[in-house]
Image (cartoon, rainbow, N blue to C red; front, side, top):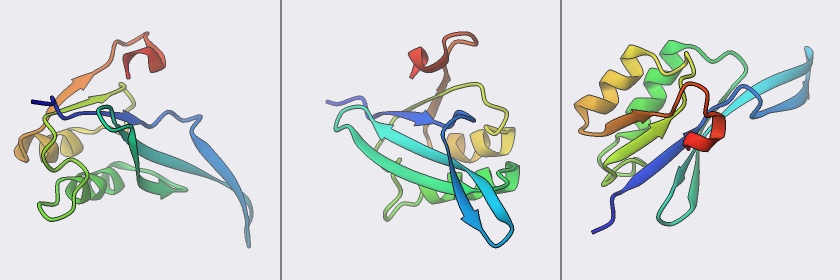
Length: 110
């Protein structure tokens, strides 16, 4: 039985710069990788990511109908401050086990 392991990429350097009416704007890209299938899901793109945005992302990921984490058991993430207690609480309530990677391991933990 597969473990249902998903890794999250959310480093600050995973960004894209786009010309907007206000000039050059940097957007953060939050993505997930299903380790067993190597499937990638873009969970969200935001110019100003914050805790409320991350909580909405968590609700979207845990959706029973089409959430990317549906049927998954583990979520590996880095120690980015965007993974707030609210974000982790929503995932825990849905039954997902979160595993933060090592503090100094960078992408090696994912």
